Amino acid sequence: MSLDSSPLSSALLPVLHRIAIALERLAPPAPSAPDLTAADAFVWHSEGGRLEPVATVNRVDLVLLHGVERQRDTLLANTRRFAAGLPANNALLWGARGMGKSSLVKAVHATVVEDAATADRNASAASLAAPALVEIHREDIPSLPHLLQITRKSPRRFILFCDDLSFDIQDNHYKSLKAVLEGGVEGRPDNVVFYATSNRRHLMPRDMIENERSTAINPSESVEEKVSLSDRFGLWLGFHNCDQATFFAMIEGYADRFGLDVPRATLHAEAVEWSMTRGARSGRVAWQFIQDLAGRLGKGVS
Image 1 (cartoon, rainbow, N blue to C red):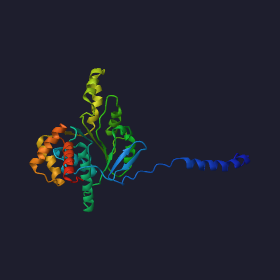
Image 2: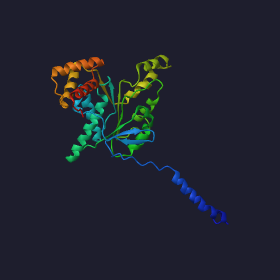
Image 3: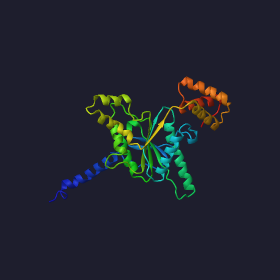
Image 4: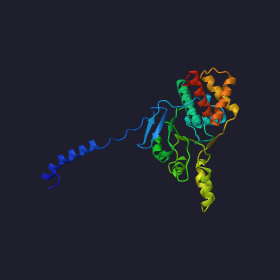
């Protein structure tokens, strides 16, 4: 007599069936596939492996960014090629604080999205596909392979964006990023580029590089292994402290845009005083001055 036909097994089958149903109820539901058309920008959360749509991106218009015209034109051309399905480079925007590195990335993305919408309305033969901007935090760099698994399967194109990217002496996350950018068996998907901003050209502090030279058995090889990360970016766009004329151009551009009716001489004098209290001239300082001025005049800057 087979086991299936035994009285014991016949009695156990209903019990086992009920247990299986109960276990299915207790098991967490399978994660749903993210809707990658839900927005034009997302934030990647490595814990849970999810992409959170961003309804409104905190950005400034491209025309308001002064003193970075060469960087603007280069990054915009690269991004437009990428949106058109053509080869494009990863980009590293490095240099002085507050000079608009992250603002430029977001403004360029918004411009290309607008270009795509215009081309779509005009039924242009050379229409662009609006790429999605995905922000990934520096501490989530090790989860990049998981993110690429998601984006690789989508017909949409993605700009992965990491703001203020850098590594310290105890941080080995740069190895994960190197493999994603150019190395690895699968390589970077054709529908993905990586844009990063950093205050450091080689993404690592100078004393870390010097320490490698002084302590490594083969100093040149050890240093090359670390600084080669920045070589994985095809575009290096440098940002430098602005002079007073450029600072005034930033102030005037904001004032004209938001209708802040202040005589130029007064505007310049107050801007100089503001920059002196901050000990710097930069796009960030200019924007902070405009916010203060607009508040005193009872005007909005949105």
